[in-house]
Amino acid sequence: MKIYHNNRCRKSREGLAMLEALDKNVEIINYLETPPTVKEIKDLLQMLGLKPIELIRKNEKIWKEQFKGKELSDDDIITAMSSYPKLIERPIIVKGSKAVIGRPVENIQKLL
Image (cartoon, rainbow, N blue to C red; front, top):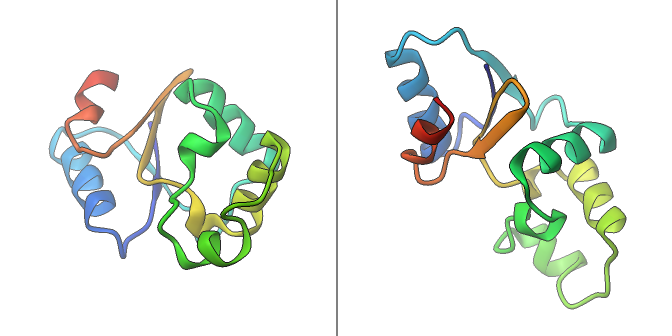
């Protein structure tokens, strides 16, 4: 399993703690330090079954200042997430070919 994790985020820490409590072997990806590529984001979106805009944290300052209200294609949004990984909703937990956003943390149970 993988978790796209931001240690500063309480929900992300809760998700990681849940996985560790279940004794799951988890690969931690600190996505702010190692941003996912455009291809990785597209793969995550497919596993999540989401459209790019559904993975965006719309309350982030960078979104409001640079992207909100503009006409953006899916590719534009994906590129924005790759360039500004803080825009990506978190945590994302991946198991095989499936993924969930661990918000609320109970979503993780659906994947297990």
